[in-house]
Length: 171
Image 1 (tube, helix red, strand yellow):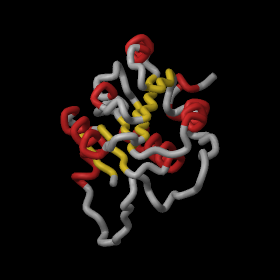
Image 2 (cartoon, rainbow, N blue to C red):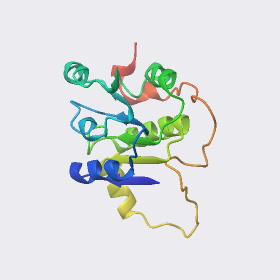
Image 3 (cartoon, rainbow, N blue to C red):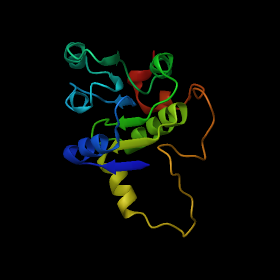
Image 4 (cartoon, rainbow, N blue to C red):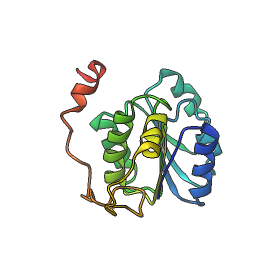
């Protein structure tokens, strides 16, 4: 199942409704850990954020594998993949209302790599697009937390257009 929301309360409740004890949860955009702290301690949690402020806050959480880095970078994806090769819940909160194209690309890459049962995305632009779109009547849908059309196994190759998104990713 893929769930979309914008309100942080709805996003957090969606995660809590989907998480079971001992699930593996990957949280992209954990910020200072407000949502992370709500996830049961019995879960295997991998949290990723590129904010310098997140480092000290996330170190306070004993049950979390924290990765400091940009989720758009291939090496960050590879670092998470070394910890686990699958997840039960993928939670994505990258800026809340900004850059729906980036959020969708990150969703595609991470979900096709980890094949979650459930994905929860918090992004106003993606939700607005979903609520505004009218389908052509074609029934193409996925029951999983990833797009079943893109079921390739393993980490997708480095995507060259990442360099086009932002000059901050260029080395």
